[in-house]
Image 1 (cartoon, rainbow, N blue to C red):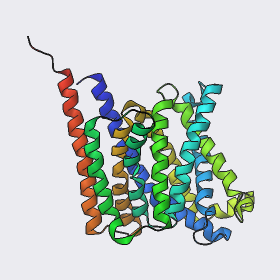
Image 2 (image 1 turned 60 degrees about the horizontal axis):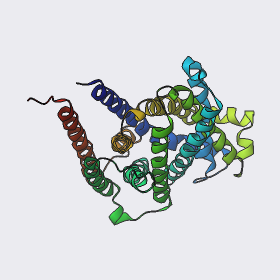
Image 3 (image 1 turned 60 degrees about the vertical axis):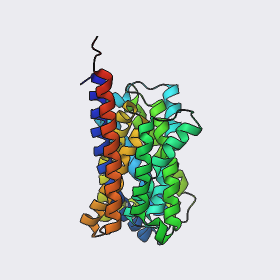
Image 4 (image 1 turned 90 degrees about the vertical axis):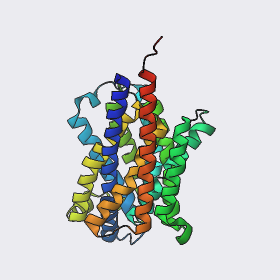
Length: 321
């Protein structure tokens, strides 16, 4: 196997681990956001709780990233700061939309609709960047789209505010995936990760200030009182370490090594892991219809994996005169 094929395989495995961590994060984020709203007076459905959790979580993740990884403290430049601001902005919008949608629907539906990123990535690449993905990817896209449709039950139940916010999140994540592919390199991945985390946290903190109880929610005494609740401190710690540092760290490190459309296909496993974890941790199981859709999504990933593997094998077979 060539070094390129090895790199692709390692990146694939790393991004699958990231999807497991992201899947668990849906349950953690929902619990933390609801608890913050309950104890700040925001009430059910208030945007303050989810966005406050994002701000604290990513401030914590950024600080830990700089402490744990010395290489993240090196290689800074004005150009890199600019990239971090742009990348952080492309990450902030979908993260905010996702968490607002999650506060208005269940973990599984939010995760499933976030997976619509698979449709937006090749669309953006084709229409904006004039860079269509390989033909084999489109077969996986079509199959995956059918699986997502079945999993969400959209044809039967309709879409509410939470569902539309999740779809907007998917569109936003498609832009972030392409931005990561364009601006993150193996050389700048470590400092750029910390930079994006700080930018996202700052944007979210500023956004919180415009909501009722937002200013007082960052007062030291209020922060301490919120962290006295297990649903807040434990879930934020889990998200900061395993989702922000773990999943996003793996994404920024390994996604640039593979095609962004292929990365989006791998991320389709996220709703499956989110559903399984929500069932284990919160007792919210999947219907038979959702499990059918999950199977189709897995088939889409497997199809592209097999086709890509055959393509690499064909490329390295020497010609015999």
